[in-house]
Amino acid sequence: MIKLTTPIADDQIRALKVGDTVSLNGTILTGRDAVHKWMIDIFIEKNYAPEGDDQEVYESIKPMLEGGVIYHCGPVVSGLDTGDYKFVAAGPTTSIREEPYQGRVMEHFNIKGVIGKGGMGPKTLAACQENPGVYLHAIGGAASLIAQSVKQVTGVYKLDFGVPEAIWVLEVEDFPVVVTMDSHGNSLHDEIESRSQEVLEELLAKA
Image 1 (tube, rainbow, N blue to C red):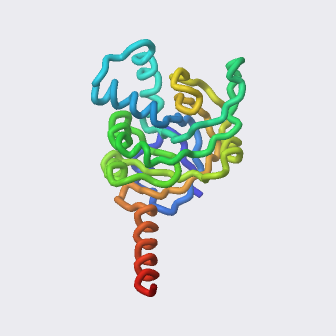
Image 2 (tube, helix red, strand yellow):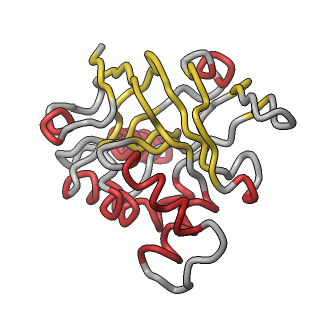
């Protein structure tokens, strides 16, 4: 298992290949649909002017995402009434919903790793090559187990988006993931889809 700590250097990313198992450590941030759309609309495409705490949040998260990791996760969090936040469940959510945004978000913030489940498409794969970066597959159905890797919740932004959609800042230790899209244009998800299509065609031919 390859141990990586954020921020992650380009040469460490280039050394990773699909199938590598990684133990992730350091600071990571969660971000799902609302966060990605907010990043694109206000700070990348600049369709809208920042309002409220938008600019303050942007300036806070930008250095944490530099060489960092974003996690597609809608957590279950305790301590919402006291501010003593703890992750009860922290499983990955399906990543393909972020495909329209992810590549540009990676480029803008210099994000090196994207964690989720199910893989992503050609835009994200191209961004992994150019940026460079990797897609890291987390174990679906193991939300409670993954939560044990979250040693501390050090902050939260955009809680007005709702608990699952907010930006949670986490300190993780030995967070287990697998590289399924690398910076060399390889995607395990594409390979599986291609093989599945071949098997389907063979079965149909025999029918």
